[in-house]
Length: 328
Image (tube, rainbow, N blue to C red; front, side):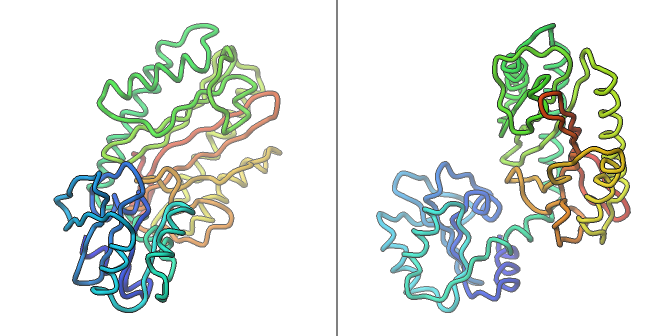
């Protein structure tokens, strides 16, 4: 934790940090929190985690109990000096930290924390890989038990049950059949699946999430087969574009251009970082200014969606190695 804090302070130009965002707390302390009522406060020397009287203590960092935010404010006044960097996850969290740091110079350091956490350790990559394996197996389990006219909810339920049977949690699990497959954020309902289904699933291992999408052609039309091949080829082109030092924008462009050249639209980004949060850095999009570094982990998920007809998306998780993308 000490090295991570030092790098955040150096990159942000701050003298100490106040961390309240749940994923950042997990990243910096390796401890899980049920609510965003914990505050990690640290400079280069002192590191203290403030928790409510309802919480336990944590082995990875010195823990102090607080009854009101005035306790935290008093401790900061007595122990910290200079510009405070803060990282919060909600607007309520921001309002609380604003009170804690009232009268002090402060700076939002969410970007610095996200940029640092975008490059994973090998241990983090192992956790994401383990989550990815279970996610893929869960999807295979669901489809191997698929029956004619099964509902979206039934399919999603089977996939979820497989994940929990492996002592893992899931951060999301959707199944989108037929016309609903053209709605990327559609939640499973009682729609019976007849021709095509898109499933989007993410199991978690020690808080680290995977994110896999598959499109299954059950009784497809010629157009469904055609679109599937275009999306499949677009993903391959983006995968081939990945290597250390390449821009995220270039990876997006490689697959996007293929879809556009076939006279279809591509309405979302090509991918996003995964880890302790489902949609993190790097952003693989046309507007991204990020350059890919070794051990960055992200999805590549091109898709084509034809309203009131069907949609196709194929998504896998990759880690950047020196000269290529390695699929997890």
